[in-house]
Length: 111
Length: 112
Image (cartoon, chains in turn cyan, red):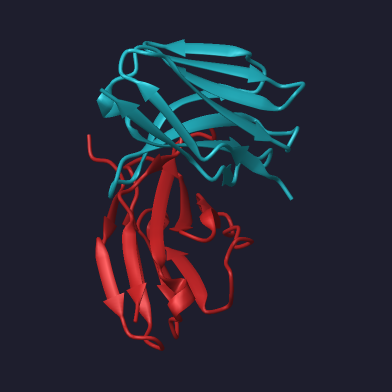
């Protein structure tokens, strides 16, 4: 079945850029998403990209999609301590009826 | 505006009891999804409702799990004869289109 992989952990210094990577296997994915989860909280939709795009920018967030390599990344510019959280990438299947999530990347921002 | 709401926020139950979890989707969203998040399994899809169509139950882990959506709005997820491995956070999401799913805060279920 479909599989979404992420590295477990990323540590950066405040003010640096963070890049969180994700790979997926379903070539028929329609949309790819990034969600943020803070401790004890639900999933917050950060941004998403349609599969026929290769880049999307939204303020400090830049999403890059390499459809050939099935690689998705999220870049956070000028990372702040409030960005510390777990970040999940997810793909929407072609039927549009479910998301498959990666295991999440814990981002730690050091002051 | 109001987001997806879920109740209860926390539920502790004894093994073997039945539980009901509730989800109120965002008004106007026709699609509703249930997922669960557990330490060992990450985030897993459970069930999907779209309008008046038959639900996609392909993610339900056993026949002890069932869900209903009444009037195209509120949904309840029922777990019968709960087991300890059912302990998880149960998340509900809704969407208007296929592109954006908005999640509720979840119900943390603990089976003792």
